[in-house]
Length: 150
Image (tube, rainbow, N blue to C red):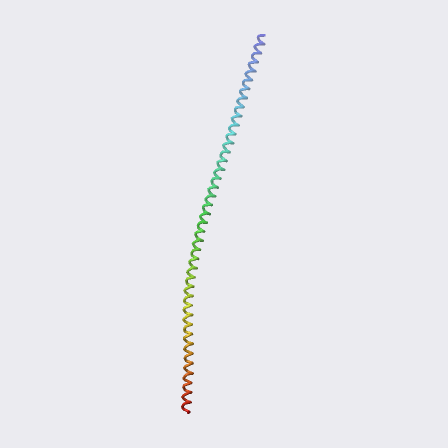
């Protein structure tokens, strides 16, 4: 019986050791699995963080590019506005000069026309006087001839 008892105890101890070893192996496997899962989760989080960082960097670049383009467009608009204002001002100045030149020409033409009209009036007066003088002299001649015939 003692031998059976010892044998039973030995088997029980062996079974217990085996159970403890299995338990330890299971714990070890579970620990390894949890470690692997933790590493995979950490890797996934790291990859996600890198993707998020890249996304934010790209967003920042796009925003900087957009702002630079907006500044360029605003500078172009400002430059265009200045150019338009300058050209408008130059156009008004040219128009004012043209109007002044036109006024000078008109005044010169008026003076010329008035001078021409005065000359025409004087010429007409001279022609009238010459005609009158010719008639007067002719009348005098006629009167002299008539007086001589009498």
